[in-house]
Amino acid sequence: MASPRYQRQDEDLELIRRCHSGEREAFARLVEAYQNDLFGKIYRWVGQKEVAEEMAQDVFLKAYRDLKSFRGDAKFSTWLFQIALNRCRDFWRVQKRSPDNWVPLEDRHDLAHGEVSADQEIERNQKIQRLRSAMSELPEIYREALGLKFLNDLSCEEIAHVTKQGLSNVKMRLLRGVEKLRKKLS
Amino acid sequence: MKEEEKKALEEFFANDFSPSEQERILLEFPSLPQDAELLHSYLEALRSQPVPELRRDFSERVMASLGRPPLWETLRAGLGSWRRIALVSSLSAAVLALLLVGPRLWTQKDAAILVREEILENQEKRYQVRFAIRMPDARTVEVAGDFNQWNPVALQPSVKKDGTFSLELPLGEGTYSYAFLVDGKKWIPDPAASRKISDGFGNVNSLINL
Image (cartoon, rainbow over all chains, first blue to last red; front, side, top):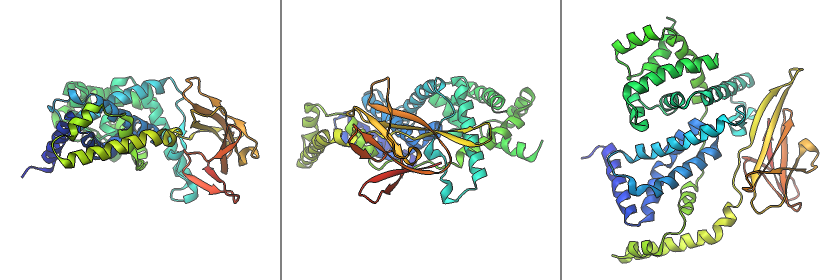
């Protein structure tokens, strides 16, 4: 019996085949299968719910339009994530030109609920703001490597696959990226 | 090496670097343990932030944004079985319904309430709050609330002319109720605000807590 991983891949290929035949409902099944994971990954990068939802929607729209070019030689989730990465790159390029110290209200924990002390909450929000701000200032190659590893929990091998870089290249970008990020945060 | 630095380094290397690689790296990047430890504390803050729930109608919105299928696609998908024809018919009817009703549902796009903290010279805390809403059919949008004694203040239309209106206001700590006034006539709560409150006169206002 096929492992869950291969079952998922087989299901995806079948749904994509049906999409190619004109069955839109098949694409809806793909959206439902991956929407939460994709949204979560994008949210970790951008920290804003509405923005992450909009970006996730853009990713699925692009995926639908480019579905004919998906050859099945990689996992659908990886292919989808590559589209998401390009979308995040666009987001960060715009962010670089925008004020970097805005935080969505929803990112600020509601103090009235009393789950976290005011001081802890302020410190946490400040750290998150500083981290996002520092990452937005990094060159794209380092920001991506760090984001994929530490925000999306990808291994170096997975990062190499998604970004189409060599493994040693990815590792070096992580090392230099951490060094540069620390300088910005210190 | 401190215990925290060791832990942070282990997280950094994970299963990606062999022991010999790790040795070489520590020679070339001697500050890596400290760098990793600092980064770890920031990442913990970020990871402790829960991922919000995706909106429930997300997949419907995605499918609606694909637009109407070409007729030949619908016909081709409908051939072969009554079940397929029934499915395509109901799908087409749903798409048609969405096309008729959809623009009304999605004219108003959610926008995030953005907040920036400022520390004033007297060490007091103040918040610059950016109110924003997308109303492509509106001529004017104003905001009024407890913070300005319910005197409507105009939001500025976006230079991109995409129907977005926004305004930044400085507010002190506290909880405020407010609403948007569209074209000087209609009061609506802020779609971006998760908390709402009735004003006791049949209207619903939004709540913001700073």
